[in-house]
Amino acid sequence: VIRRLVVLALVAFMTLPTAVVIAVSFNPTAILSFPPAGLSLHWYVNVLTYPQFQRAAVNSLVVTGFAVVIALPVGTLAALGLERGPGRGRELWAALLLSPVVVPGVAAGLGFLILAAALGLLRSRVVLIAAHVALVLPFVLRSVWVSVRNLDPTVERAAASLGASPWRVFRRVTLPLLRPGLFAAVLFAIVVSINEFVVSLFISTRVTEILPVAMFTYVVNYTDPTIAALSTLFIAVTFAAVWLADRYLELGRLFLHHR
Amino acid sequence: VRGLLAPAVVILAVFAAALGSLFRLSVLEFVPGSLQTGGLTFANFRAVLAPQYLEAIRDTVVLSGATTALTLVGAYPVAYALARTPSRGVRSALLVLTLAPFFTGAIVRTYAWVLVLGNTVISWPLPMLFTERGVLVGLVHFSMPTMILILAAALSHIDPAYERAAASLGARPARVFWRVTLPLSMPGVVSGSLIVFAWTLSAFPTPELLGGGKVKMIANVVKDLALDSFNWPGAAAFAILTFALTLGLLAGLGRLAAGRAR
Image (cartoon, rainbow over all chains, first blue to last red; front, side, top):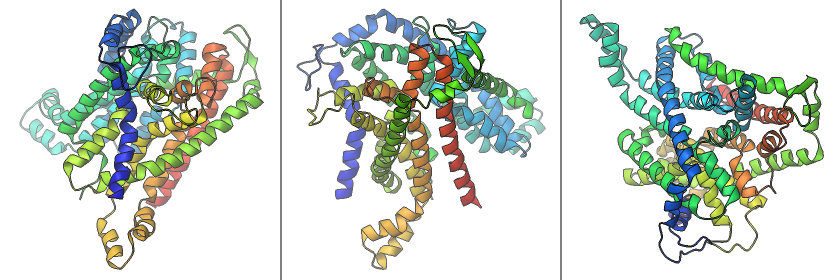
């Protein structure tokens, strides 16, 4: 019983901030109070009508869209190349391609800033998109690789021996069998890119900044619950995504070992 | 077949170019008031040792150590429940509740703690916001999901029969834990701690918002130097310091893992 209470208390610690954000977002007054004095959608209206958030939301969609569309095929090809290629050097290539994950955000962000300045691209979105592709690629590679490893090459050989062209084998056999890995890859890529903050802070301007950066600037300058409303929208989308992923991918199987 | 890696290698090369320009700038002289740089120098790395920066480095290491210890203690019971619960519903609920903050961005999570620590909901007996205590709470919350996942993975590999055997031979639950469960889960404990420590060393949004400029970790100094003082060479030297610390720790982790595999 005590053990169960401890776990409950820890889960409460994990979820407390989320609960407070949601409660505050419906608060009618600008001065934060808890429990809220009533219900109001005022801050949601504020979120949707604040021009800088509108611009940042469009930027987020553009940057994340490009990042996912570029990283998905690149990562899938790399996963196939790693698994099907010669065993020698595979570990080294995998380590190299996954390495951007361990670079601290400030180091990568400052590096991209210096690179952008040297190339005269400080005001363009190109560097922002390139950085997002690089940061998202390890997650795509990892997710797709799991599916490639579970794919039995004899199925593809069977299709080929029955006369299917290599392209047809890829389209009709390989891709459908990789679908769970591809789905997980897209999910991870979107979540990582849409929430990316540190690197983006270094390489964006007021014109190109994405939502997390705009939210950061707002939090530093204002104290009203507008960010609580925007955060609630983010949390709702994230919970839905994680729930869907658990439903269809059984997240437990990704992380836990079962006999 | 190796040719399939080519597009990924191009992207890796862009990333390497960014890091390369970081290293190049760190050894070039800073010209105040300009983004132009002077000749070769090691002054940027010497500047890291100035007293106010040494304080930031010390705070970073102390906060990272405390975060790792608290996260380990907090994550263990949840990971244990996750690995051992027989019910699929409980497992799903625990996973979604612990993973969801993992997927909500750093800004949303940190802003949530600004609200909680800022005396709006709970009246704290001690000031929390803009103190090291507050930053510590935020960092622990941030590290919990990672630690829970790593520990749960390690615990799910332990056959419960070992624990049952120890208990049937007369060991009390506490003794079973200290002599059987904990030693068998050490691989997870070690790798989880190293990863959390390395991540916390370069933490940025949490100290930036919960520290409110009063608590500075290394990453905050990098941002101040780069985006407020426009001293890119100085910031680069600091960023490389974080990078080196992280790499050193992860290399240690790699050697431990290799040692165990042998």
